[in-house]
Length: 550
Ligand SMILES: Cc1cc2nc3c(=O)[nH]c(=O)nc-3n(C[C@H](O)[C@H](O)[C@H](O)COP(=O)(O)OP(=O)(O)OC[C@H]3O[C@@H](n4cnc5c(N)ncnc54)[C@H](O)[C@@H]3O)c2cc1C
Image: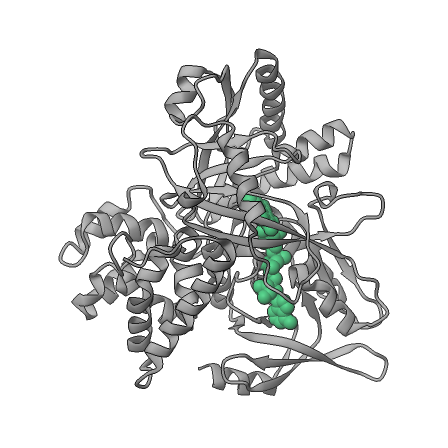
């Protein structure tokens, strides 16, 4: 299929090539395709493999941005908070199986602190407006706070509780790609942009790409190009026009995961770390996700990694609020991402840079670049960028329709839909597996149940301690463009995101299932498993995270 696609795409002319398959690029491809444009989306790695799978996974306006906006009377920042809060609702409705509200508790140590936060969070709720579906904020007693977060230090005075959205960032990206495919977008992962072809007057007419699996090269003829490469946006901008000034300041943010205390369903928001940031400790798919940091990052040619100092910073930030402390030995996994911030003269550190976005058009080459922003506002960002593309193509009549889009699996989704799934497939799915599949694939979970019927062995969990079953891997290979073990364990099942040891233990099963799905030749399965082990060990070593092989 890949080889055929790469050959065929050279025979046509496209309205738009989108470079970059993260939140921005997948969102823009979907928007453009839904308007009726003929689109190709390329991603040099896996869908969401850049920053878009490494976020805090919150759908929010940003409590800290609200505080900064009010302190500095910064209306741009206030507008950004408002956009985030309204998009939070849109995303919750687009994929109800992947995105939901989550309560967050902020402990305070005096009534003054409690008052300050209560007023701030009430304002946050007011900005969200009447349309919001999540409960508002409230001041809660110490007893109530300890009920939500039993590990809190007993000296807390009380706490303030509010709600935001939480989602699975990588799977959301994949679903956007799949939705774009429903509108005939050609979506190619592991295909990298490397050069532009131009007309004599310097306008881009072709995009040169290379397939990173087979090494094939292709040249795509197109009327427009949208650069959605996040932290790497300047590379593409400078390839289009070497005289452009670099605009992106990348900022590294890291997360670690820890064992989740039994029954903990509420997140902890720590209002101030030693460097003045917020920290979040959030229940996510059975682990406690702790993050994040914010430090300038320049070595874009290298994958960002977590340092010992960063792990210590995160643990210290959390432990100051806890009775029983976490130690480095407790860390289960960790990952680092790069915020694609837009440089602004006069705003000193990366913490002060706006999380707003910008659509830039280079008049000489015609390249349109979508820069900055955040996950929560990706749809609005995509809309602005595709509006600009339509203006350039003289198709202003094609308007954005993504505000009410429902992603695959979100159609007719009901919280207790697992019951029907279980009833209809009781011969292959246990109640627990039906619940798990319903949460991950929504109303499309029945497709996994169908796969289970092909081979009873595929109903088995990948290894002890994980919910994921073999049929999911076959599904990822057949329908979600997974190509290797990491695509499955990291972005489709999130096991690597959450727990390196479980990722290690599931490796062989995943390699074997991919081998069955792709009819790999002898030896390839072992080769892929070993390649993944090496990658995982390297990451664990750099981060100091222990993999328990037993
Ligand atoms: C630590 C951290 C926590 C965050 N938490 C939140 C949060 O909780 N909520 C929120 O709303 N936002 C959050 N954000 C922000 C959000 O994650 C990012 O703004 C968003 O993911 C950026 O998406 P993107 O598509 O612009 O970039 P990316 O996801 O990085 O996508 C760009 C893609 O372009 C590809 N690419 C690059 N060069 C090429 C090429 N030559 N050819 C083909 N493809 C190429 C890359 O491989 C990459 O996949 C967080 C960010 C960080 C770093």
